[in-house]
Image (cartoon, rainbow, N blue to C red; front, top):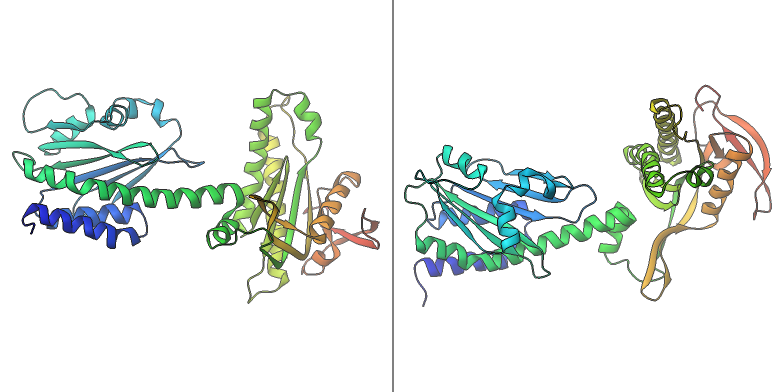
Length: 394
């Protein structure tokens, strides 16, 4: 029978495996873990956890726990590893060296890092930082600090060391879960990511939805890109996407495809709303995106490439799900109404218009619209009536 600190460490490990793994995220896990460390009699006054991340917007996450205070959570920008903040930190020393580091702060000895001097001034007596190793290789770090004179005892450090493997496993599990969700959202979108995680992963897993469709495409982008270096082309495209994506998301739309310089988005109606809600949101996103492109052009130098975009709006029924072959699938929107939207967008160039709507879309709107006429769309038998907004809003 185990007793004393050894038994308490085993109990905390058991909690991590039985209950900790069901907590929402690593913030909740760090909070719960530290609270139980303190309840076990360990004089823990500060803990920090530094994790690398695979995310489009940030490079890592730093969390600091202090008893009785909200968790301090900071997302670290890409490039942080090249800054003095990281280069001159114990986190880097542990991540690169792979060994625990231990400093007593309750004396006058010199300290190698500025953060340790700050902790000494705040009254901490002992600071330890140890590797937090993932099974797939990346090295992270977790630190413990106490204000108690004399610092941690060997038994207390043995307690923390005994619980670290289970803690690291749970941290990695939650980080992996977050990573998978982030990657799916980044590359296929929020709702497709949720559906994939819910099990919609087999070829042919398709559902039919009725939605407003928005297709926006740059004009003359091939000609522009031929005169620019590849990096400049990417930078230009990202400026354009920065004009388009935020309005789509702000209006509740889902970006389904990035096709070179073309963007396909859908706006689904809530069960309690009608087509007018979805189409109104799509129209708002389209006009805001065009306004953002125009504003971008006004900010640029006279010799910079000017961007012009055309938007097609349609309301129809599409198939939404997995297509492909074998184990290489694409989660996308397909169907005649997608093709119709694409055909309409081509008329933006031919008619020199920035926004054109189908009849199905236009008839849902409660605002002035103008008819452009009846047009033959390639691949469709009948003529289609197309519409635009009055000049002052288009």
